[in-house]
Length: 368
Image (tube, rainbow, N blue to C red; front, side, top):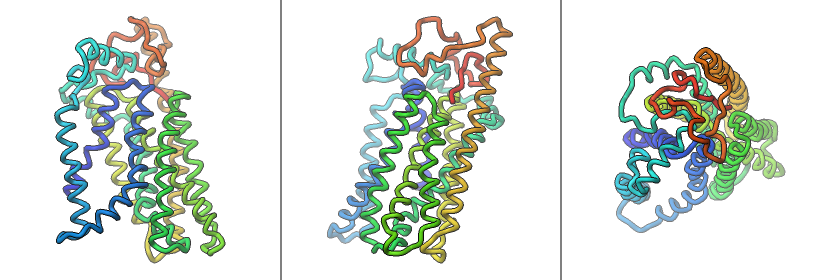
């Protein structure tokens, strides 16, 4: 319980830090880099755990493992506490001029103050009423149910192909490699295209094919290679998760609203991870047909939700354009936050660094 309680702040905090220092064009790759460490852990963490569990000690193997990683975490927490600033303006590792530049370069994102240090209940209420909140929630929940199931039953699924437990652990290592490549690769493509929704939908193709392969291929010794290929196709899904977080962050302004939005997404991810393993029952081995069927349905749901979300943010851009025209402003606003070079002074709205939400700031441009 305590482990889960303390870990609950990790993803929202990482998202807040990424949003605090980088523009919208730069965020997908940065988020993918820290999220891709899950793939690195899948590759090498099991080997470290295997070694730690065999250290001669009066403690039980699991106690040695938790003590080692717990002490490393506590030591790194001290470093983070002393070195990580609350906002770019407080960054001690930057010169005074660099701090001003770090704040000013975020103006084009129209996302408001990076850290207002003021909790605004109006932002909380807007987060609850905003349909985007529930679309992000639906997206992250839909991908987290398969994630929770495959993450918990991955080695057992490989064993069902006819491998012994030790061999199953070895064959699970490429899962982490595919996860790392899909996570970083998907972010690079999204940064290049300046679109996240289409990349998320495209990343669903491989898991859909993988589920179909595992559902239709008999569990026989001569089909092991085909089954493994289908399993590795499924392992592309982690590439969607940081893109969902960055897509949400890029379309949310206001310090309190950003934090509430990230927390809501993490709740959706946690619920999905709870439900996912329940879809796989040992009695249904080796096919696990029900779990794979639900995974397939939810991957298709992600594609549908991407379409609905894209249509909704397009409608919001149209609404903001009408508001600007009524205020005597140009209908079209050039989104400098997705360009490689900073815009000229005066090209962005006067409210760019105010603590205004995306719905309050008529100059905010939603991204797809």
